[in-house]
Image (cartoon, rainbow, N blue to C red; front, side, top):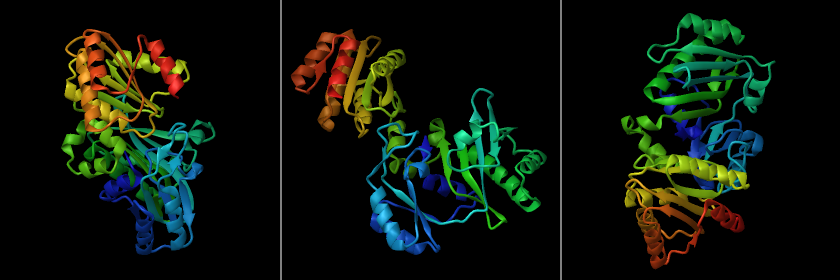
Length: 385
C-alpha cells in the first residue's frame, strides 16, 4: 500500500526526520489558508498522486505569492496528471501539498527497502538525486551504494560512516546522515513499511539534511497492527480498494481502462495477456478464489467499478469449485442494485451453472453483452473502446 507524500511525511516526522513545513489542501481555499500559515519566501504546490516524476510532468509548481498558491492549487485540483508511472490514463489530483520553499546546496538519494529475493533490508544511497533518478542510476557514471541491513538490529555505525564518506559528506553532515539512516531503519520496522525513499535528500544551509520528497510503501498484511492507518486509507481511494480486497479476493490496480472481474489467478493472467495482445490495457488484476461467495463477488465488482478510469467491465468466469456462474451472476446483480453500474458490461461464462447465471442476468435486466469465447469478448471490448 503506497501512501501520499504528505501522509508519509506525517508518519516519518515522528521519528525525527526533517522536512520543510507543509499542509495538505483539498480545495483552493484550503490551499490559500495553508500558505498563510506557512512562513516562507516562496511556496511549492505539489499534486498528491500515488506516482513519481510529478515535477517533470507539471505536478509540482513554485508560487512566489499566496495568490499564486491559490491559482496553482485550483489548476491542479481535479486535473489528470500523466507521468511514466501513471500510464496513459493518468491519475486525478484530489489534493495538493503546500510546502515551504527550500533552497538547496546539494541533492542526494537515500532509500531503505525490503529485498524479497535476498530476504534482507537494503540501504541504497547515491550522491546525486532528484528528478529522473532512475535514469541517473542506470547511468554507470552515477554509482549507487548498497548496504545490507538486518531487520532485527540497527545498521552498524561504522558501515554507515563509510557510506557517508562515499557520499562525500563532511564530518558534521556525515554524523547527521548516520543518524537519519538509523531513524529510517527504526521507522521502517515499527511502521511495517516495505520501502522508504527520500528523493531528493537535500543539504540545506550547508549544515542540515532535509527530505524534500518521500515515497513510502506499507505492508498490506500488517494493517491490522496499525489502527492509525485507518485515516490514511479513508483519504486514499486506491489504498481503500486494496484494503477491501483483502476480504475474499485479490486486487491489484494497474493503469489501463478495462476493468476485470475474473475467477482464478491463472485465468486472470491469461485474460490480461489476451487484452494486451489486442492492444487493450487492463485496469486491474482481480482474482476471485474458488470459494468466493455472492457477497465477495459484489464487493469485488464495486471495487473495480470505483475506478473512474475504466471504460468497460469484463466478467470472465469458469464455474467450478464452490463458486459457480450463477453465484457470480448474483454478486453482479447485487452490486448493480447497490450502485448502478454505468459502464458497459461484457460477460463470458463457462462451466458449472453457465446457463443459469446468464438467465439470472437477463431476468435482472442488467444491460450486458454476452461473449461465448474470450476472443469474442475482446472484439466487443475493442468496439466499446
